[in-house]
Amino acid sequence: WVMKMAAPTKLGRVLSCTMTRVRSYCTSGEQPIKPYRPRRALMYVPGNDERKIKKIPSLNVDLAVLDCEDGVAANKKDEARATITRMLDEVDFGRTECVVRVNSVDSELADDDLLAILQAKKLPSGIMLPKVDSVEELQQFAANLNAAVAEIEANPIFDLITMVESAKGLMNLPAILQEAGNLIDMSPFRLAAVTFGSDDFCADIGASRTSDASELLYARQKVVVTAKAFGLQAIDLVSIDFKDTESLRRQAEEGARMGFTGKQVIHPLQVPIVQQAFSPSPEKVAWARGLILAFQHHQQEGKGAFVYEGKMIDRPSLLQAQNVVQLAEAVELSGSQE
Image (tube, rainbow, N blue to C red; front, top):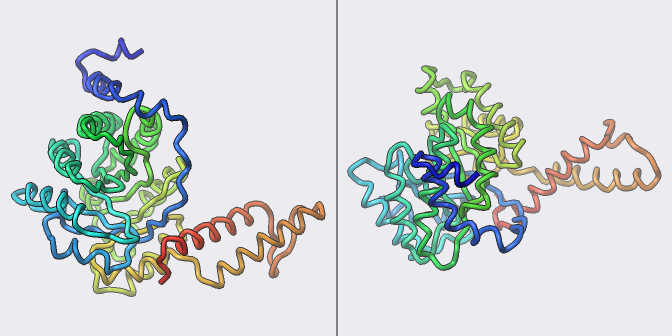
């Protein structure tokens, strides 16, 4: 099969680049399962703004994205790459997960981004890949990343966060995520989350953004369902009016109810509101733990469904309670409790 695909096509070039590193990712056995990592607030920080990057440790945000893409002007790309590389080495980000958003494959700037940031001695834990519209773009990114890490002895493995920002990307999302799984043994990344880029998506389909985001309901639901089908986190749309905190709170709580695990933010004021919305309350955690204990007790007595606090409980209810406890424990372990 490899020989057949070795023709000078895009996929052939991907395979010729990645196959040289297959041994590195396949011979060490299965990768250990990582503990759940909360990504309740994902905050973008322009990669060329050193002052804002140095402020990240004080914000108590789950995930900071050092941006090389839309948050940086075209004539500032080189400055952003150099600043990010230096800040990765100089700044202790504490409990905050730090990833870098590179430019899209289609832009032909991603190669330069990767080659620059991977010069850092302290590499980011993950990479965000925007505007993924097709399987072929993901394959090309895999080849680019393999080439960029070829000289790094440690064989780093990055968490990959992809972005859905177009109608084509949304329709192709299941195939893209499937291919990410297929590439796992040939590439230094493990897909961790899918992020919905609402503003680019609206522009692509000709929709107008509204405060209640009703025009995006189908797309948001499809992102959640598809991401969860592949065992991935789903990160909801950004609220660009950062001063409207009540609208932000409503939108964040709605996203949490829909099944999103986090939300994109663009200003420090949004961080605590969003992280609280995506955290279970102490009352909810107590309810969940009590339900789990009650379920175990009834199982020992040979009973299936039972009544708990006035409601009929069965196995789906147990799974929901386990999700609540898992998130609460992960938030506690991460050291962030709003």
